Length: 157
Image (cartoon, rainbow, N blue to C red; front, top):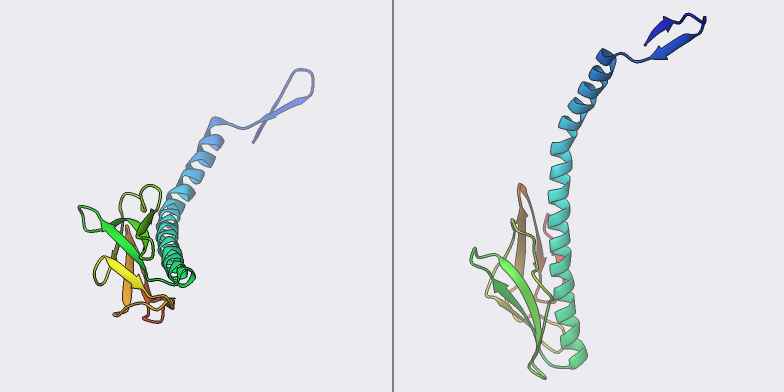
């Protein structure tokens, strides 16, 4: 900071252009270091949100089967790239499909699962064999959950 005297005896304080440029460069360097870690964290949050939605739908299908006393199915609808784009719960008691509103995942996010595209829960909430695993990938991040025959869900990482 430079102090320039004025004719009246008071000093005028201020910042030079060079000092302001140094501050801007330092802020730019700090931001360039922070952006990759923030991007990675955002990818992880997207993967977690997608898996939480899948887990919620699995629990909803299981609960629907138990409450209705009849088998219920969770149907996965795949897109052109082989990734699941939407899910729907079908109760076999009234053969009525309750689809989720809109698309399930963001562009670039891919969810795949083992087995066929239909999961069936019996009236006791048990999954018809075999057990299934669900994998979600977004950018460099990936995570998965496993659904047991007893209907229990656990994170596999």
